[in-house]
Image (cartoon, rainbow, N blue to C red; front, side, top):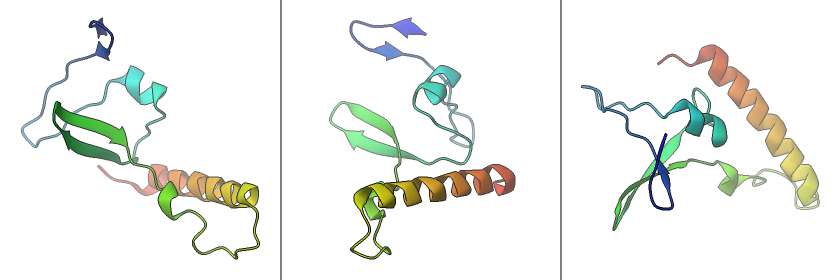
Length: 92
């Protein structure tokens, strides 16, 4: 990976189908796995790519008297189940 002034960068190519490969080092660093979603954001400087998180709706279907810690625990358990389903069922 080449290093710029204060940011690290790496170059990849866009395929005929508009697909790109996220470099392995970045996938590992940011915990990106097969089936995960990334968000493409238009900025004044260009395009920003971020891991899409599903935490905004966490706890919406849980009773109000459930502690925040328990909500997070439940959400993490669901995330593990979803990742496993993605890993076994997702087809590129």
